Image 1 (cartoon, rainbow, N blue to C red):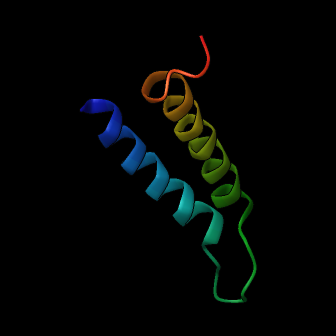
Image 2 (cartoon, one colour; image 1 turned 90 degrees about the horizontal axis):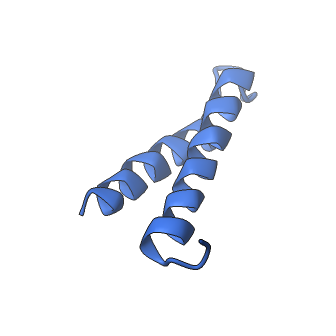
Length: 55
């Protein structure tokens, strides 16, 4: 159950970080960085812990 909550939270953080725009319509490097890191953790937990494809 905790894995599914983790997937939802990190997926939301990744989505926000990768789609966020500032007032000028540009991406901030900080949002892109943390969004990418959250996406990596989300994919890792999905494939390793939930689907058990690796490991």
